[in-house]
Amino acid sequence: MLVAIEKQSDGPYIAYNKDSEDFTAIGSGDTIAEAKEDFFNSIEEMKEVYQESGDEVPAAMMEKPTFKFDLASFFEYYSFINVTAFAKMIGINGSLMRQYKKGNTYISDAQLQKIQTFVNNMGTDFQGLRLV
Image (cartoon, rainbow, N blue to C red; front, top):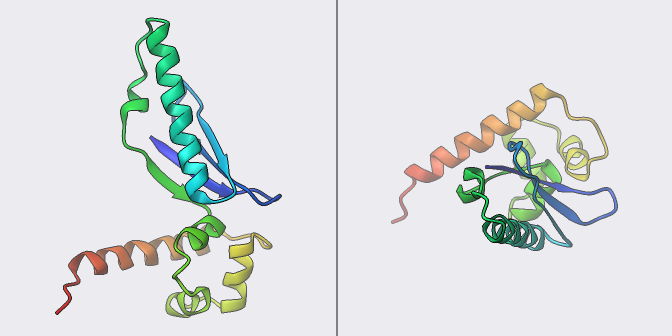
């Protein structure tokens, strides 16, 4: 199940599933952790409704979710990442990256892909890293 986490324009975060036609679950909160917790609570409540009515619980509800973050949520959740240093490593202007983070400017698909590729490569690097 693919779950999007996004920062709303009025402040709180929302988590919702994006890939199921059988159901829509939504969670919200002042933090990403609260939004995720509320989302999982929604899933559990929906499972109970299915079970109480004798209906089969959709398979997607049983899957471990994959989370998809917008940039504001990404930098909030991984708050230890310095946005300016991150931008410099990718080759994006730091001021522009801060605007992306705030949601104040449009991010092109090419720029988003550049950031995504860097995050994926960073994950691969960390998987192979061994501390001595």
